[in-house]
Amino acid sequence: MFSNARTSQILLALASQPGERLTVREIMAVLQDRAFALLIVLLGLPNCLPMPPPIPLVCGLLLALVAVQIVFGREAPWLPSQLMNRSMARKDVERAVGRAVPAFRRLERISRPRMTFLDTPLAMRLMGAVVLVLSLGLLFAPPFVGQIPLGLAVCLVGLGLVERDGLVVVGGLLIGSIGLTLSLGFVYAIFTGIDTLI
Image (tube, rainbow, N blue to C red; front, side, top):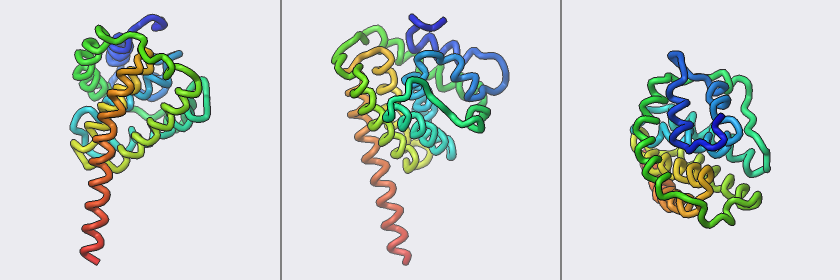
């Protein structure tokens, strides 16, 4: 159904699913054969907006699980049944997709297969390791807005993998380095504050 669809088209189809809430199982059914790369995009999307805890934490944990499977070379994502049955409000998905789709469409107009050495199985495993690092950054991101650079980075990496555009992936990595720096600074500030109190 979506074999030739662009990322923005699949995300719009996801946001238009019926019902008040979307389960992870329903999301996976929409993503189909591009589930790994599109899951990366989807888990990054909520973090592109100011979001309260525990949304960055949940997205970070799910992203880490997906990234580990990419590192080990799985062909399709596996998620525990408890996670597959978890749901999120469709309006939240719709809001995130609505904000992201115009930017994705602009990127898709200029995106094309470039630096395709990143499309090899070995490079895909390396990308899994990179996504794992970004997901760990999400776990420790400053609340409400600190996760936004990491969310953008994750989305760009996922979009680059879907579109086979290594240049977009590299752009995501550059933004991710900023996000990781913010997260490390936040963690350092917390530990410094605790040490001062002690």
